[in-house]
Image 1 (cartoon, rainbow, N blue to C red):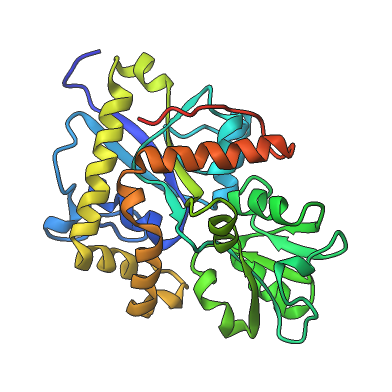
Image 2 (image 1 turned 180 degrees about the horizontal axis):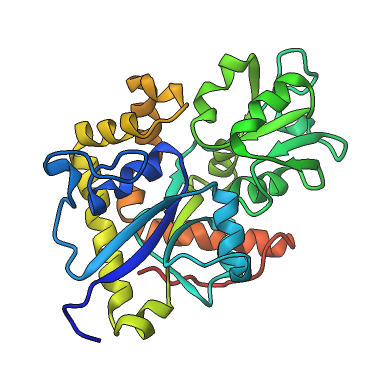
Length: 312
């Protein structure tokens, strides 16, 4: 193809703050309707060459399902997925070294009502009904390693605290910012699966979300396109981390009804948790953690076996 021809790529991410923060430098800060804000921050923050990025925010379980079953909709060129979903798409997508989220002695939490008899992860049984944010999520896979056979009700991640508080489910598996705000719903933590993983593996980080690029980009747009994309994604995250004030502005403009983002201390706490050094470059430590989680999942019959994983 002509080297000057623009290449439009779709980049799908979850709607939580760490994903929103990571990718705005590729396009500039935009309003909720997709139009750029006025001024230099409304433009890409570095040269992306012939590549242009169309950002799309969707629930992580929806992204997992679309990646696993392309027939369910148009697959994205670049997408966030749960680590647990990767074995099902490894033949079509490659993991980028940047953009992943890892829990380092912390992670998704299991909560119950204050009056619940559930006090720890050891109290979960095959009769416990837990609201979960999707059966392809890494949180769901890991909880199954801890308490195999529990009953579950998949639901939108933001609906889980309310379902626990109302008694629709016995407990809830929380991801995204709900990990920090569940107390406002009168809920009590009974376990942190990131802490369990850290203890059970001798200090390994828990792989939660991954960023992946379609292997077909090289065939469609020329050899090396996947690597070019991966390098730009790294540059985007580096810029977002460096330009903290601009990143906060992007969140404020696009917060919608998420009033928790009005609390700068809470936002900073969450971003410090999930936009970490491993997010910038997972390296060998991150790759080995992914292989360990997926290997354990495969042994338990929770996901396909993938063996060693390729990181770009």
